[in-house]
Length: 230
Image 1 (cartoon, helix red, strand yellow):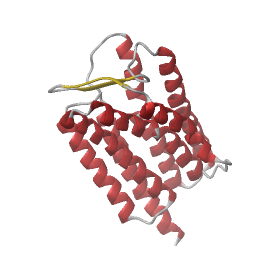
Image 2: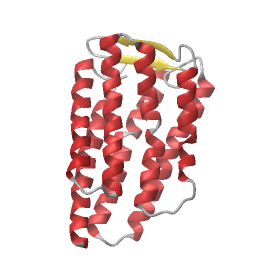
Image 3: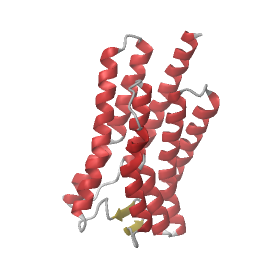
């Protein structure tokens, strides 16, 4: 669920532009490569919401949106592992749950249960998210999502305690804040409020923009760190 298609498109354009700026403007460090990709995917999610409404192809664009936000947890976790220099063998295996969920989405007929657009809301339900008929699948999906997020947060907290460089610490704090403020509240609302049958305007779009702003702050501090090394 997101705000109106026009706001989704505006958010997507801001995030696409920010991703391009980050990737093209700065030296290709780990933080530049990963944050530009994450911001781009956030933009793609918003764009899928816009296209769902303007093309009426609910299955295609609803599935693309689902896959987009499903790959974000392992992508963010692997970024954190590499940036904090935690050596974990075969990190690509962390993508396995996201790949499985994505394949289910692609090959399940009528994966998108419902999708509708109105003046204010864009609402999408699939068998994993906002579904009352597939509660077991929903539980598995959210366990995957939250476990990756929480693991990433724990690694960042550990890194904060071990670092002395102030700019490096600031980057860690911003990354931690971006994860907590841009993902967890939106996910909690998506899980809890539908079970209470309360209609609410999703604020995920604004959370995504907040992540983009924090990503730009991280890039600025990372650029200062690179200059310190020269």
